[in-house]
Length: 345
Image (tube, rainbow, N blue to C red; front, side):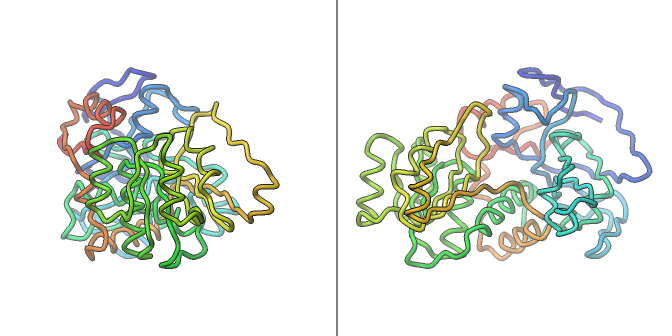
């Protein structure tokens, strides 16, 4: 099959590679695979989890080539499938609690094993056993279906907030695809007053068109703008949906008492987040992370998109062939548009 093989930083090539299954794996045809910021960062810098050569890509819409028996029912040949990329061990304490994204021995499609920038992808039995193959609703395109995985990750992040009332202010730091998915969830599921802070004019305009109550440029005026918008109270729910390390000290300036801060994005290993423990204690502030998602959240994401509550088409801004993988990665890391999708192999 043809695949984009990652050999190391700044080295990815289209190759004909052997595609061979073992007895425990099944194959899916890849219909679409989105390029995310993680893929771009791995391409440019490598990653501790990624041992080349490997095929990247984990936001996948596939298609069944044979009948697949899953815990949720039988998937017939030709069924389009959204893939949960987490490959759990099924034996650690987190797997036993169905928190598969926290598995102590976690492997991941498109990171530790071959992913979706290829004509076909191997699916191990662990993914099938946990219900990680979700049928794609007929009213979603292949490109939209590829974005169900990041939407599920955003749902996981929101699940860590105990409650979001209409009178709460939600701040999203980051105007990229993930930030705008968080925006749609904040407005659709919680009807919360939502602020988006960004840096890219096109994306900031998108945020306005998607219903953000306020959109601010990230500069030396941002703190005052947010405090004015919240009548001096600050923000009670904050989502850091960007890898920009400048956002880490910034949140302490605009967080209200009893606020909750979600570190959604990953950061480079040399970034640190220094916090005064007395600030946390006396203001009753909570800081937590969220990582990936579970099959249940992927299933919920599919329903939200199918029901029209979340519009994934607004996130897709470019479609490319596999031969254009380097262009797709560059577009992602240079913030051109929103999500670029590989949909021709």
